[in-house]
Image (tube, rainbow, N blue to C red; front, side, top):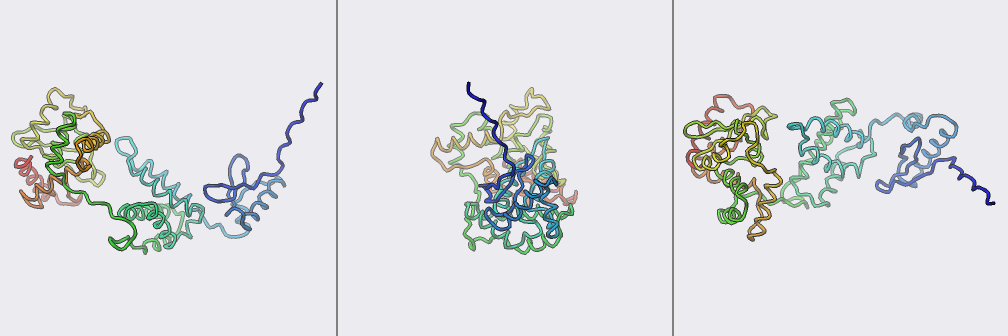
Length: 363
């Protein structure tokens, strides 16, 4: 009769391991990874020996207290500061109970920052490190404007850390010394600027899309509204008075700045919108399509008819061009909602009048 196999003897000492993604040495204790420094380095070997010695001796394996015994605690790492800000962002950047796209954008900005400097003490992150992150973004093919926005977001992360007394203000002051990338003076490419959709391309797409998508295209063309503003419309928001109809929006791009926003519907837009308003529930959205679905429908139609791919927002540019030609810059700005939140009520009233007049003429 075969003797039962002896149970495998458990490792007495935790192993010195490689974290492949970061190149860091690590040791696993009590179900969590403790990072030791660059794999194979003398520093990581010393820390490994200290932690293992502490664990075998029965003392708690706390790498922070071990480090403090050798030197002053340098404070939170860049990765920890990013994590704190991301937790804040998840609850701060919320609209209608849902996280906005800003959270996703922040994650994409944090990724190259963490890849290069996640384990560096945040207090030691300076201008040269910020430039290195910027170079990584350039090498990844990010365009100049997106990189500059990414730099601003990184500074915002460190500003939040200062506000919560995690690091000293001097860290942010140094980062502010890094100038933005200038057009023509960097390897980073410039994104092609948005331009008005030509009448030919717009008409070609209109002929092959659904009635709903065609109506949204026309409404954007006649009103200069953002697609999200139209897709958020409910019947109860539209005031159908004689002349120009007005929709007062409580949820729009600049609502968090306290800015008001109105859409004005002239005769041509009214003929389209009126069909959706008849018998509609005042609290239910008028258009049964998402912003992504609307964009995809236009992209597919562009490919189908063989014209340049354009996006819904370019219809605002088309409206702006026509509005400037017909009524001047101020009327175009009023209709597009390009007003600062601190404008006086007197000026806001004048803007509404100009926008309504413009809608009556070209909307």
